[in-house]
Amino acid sequence: MTVQEATTNDLYAEMRAIGARARAASALMARAAAAQKTAALTAAGAAIRARRGAILEANRIDLADARQQSLSAAMTDRLLLDGKRLEAMAKGLEEVASLPDPVGRELARWRRPNGLDIARVSVPLGVIGIIYESRPNVTADAGGLSLRAGNAAILRGGSESFHSSRAILDALRAGLKQAGLPEDAVQLVPTRDRAAVGMMLTLNEFIDIIVPRGGRSLIERVQRESRMPVIAHLEGVCHVYVDGGADLAKARAIVLNAKMRRTGVCGAAETLLVDRAAAPAMLPPILADLHQAGCEIRGDADVRALDAAALPASEADWSTEYLDAILSVGVVDGVAGAIEHINRYGSHHTDAIVTEDKPAAERFLAEIDSAIVLHNASTQFADGGEFGMGAEIGISTGRLPPRGPVGAEQLVSYKYLVRGNGQVRP
Image (tube, rainbow, N blue to C red; front, top):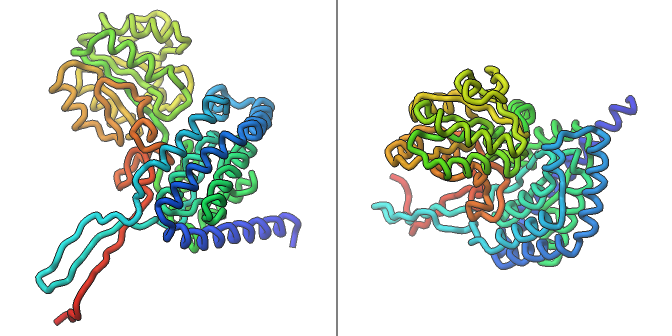
């Protein structure tokens, strides 16, 4: 046996051990009282604050590594932690703790003519495997939401955030220990070796659901190789359509925020579409705002006729998630043209219309085939915290549920409880 084979075997054995510990922890979490889970999450939030220095120091190590690897500005922004983001992380855990327990809810109940009493009740999924890139806050969000829903979680964070994620994990495990719950209910794959991802996807004996959160290549690999069901968080090719019935001041504010508030998040707008009838009046001031904020514009011929600074947009631009200060801009023939363009090029993530024309807005909301569709609001509201979920594991872009922000309420399944009085089937 070669050294490489021995190392691979050792890693596989370690991954199986992690899976076995998670399976054992999930059985205890499924029976945990709501108050106990609340206490664990509250204590974890306090631990984030108490360990602020250690977490920021770990993040500094990751940022130094990122600089050596020439990580993009968008990826570096996703990786960065500061006092404000740490406080948001702690508050997110406390908000998740305050949510109603999604486990044990009676979803439906009925009685059959033969006297059988049937109830459908919510139960945890079991063990959730979560694979994500760059953003260390996902460690807290994913771990906290899994715990609220009575699950165990195995986390495989991005190699860029390796040290930050480990420091955050320590805070989560401290909260579990303080509440008397198994620390192994949240575990982090302890290696940057990419082989661990492939091994994780084969552990259907231990893992019930896989949630990938990252770029298209990661999602496609997980969907191709996973032996368990996948809740996919695909890239965010998000659109803002400015209709002829839009209020210009409202449109300028929404477009600027949707693109430039944070360019590296999945809810950032990547394409702006404008009604042909309104383009001459509305596009110049909207694009002036974007240029002033440092955004590169890539436009079609109609856009370039109105904006000399715009670069030509290629066919690939219309389906590109830039995660940067770049925006593709096109002119379309009204709401019908916008709907056709978005359903063709979009990723079914988040899309918005800006208009005061209610029929146009309702048509857009009904016909856009995306997980989140907004009227007169920024696409950057595509976030579980903004939906009142405390946090999110990701935005699911598939057709099967869960769809949209995946919070604690989406991380449960159900079973049927049937109560009889001696009935037998004829």
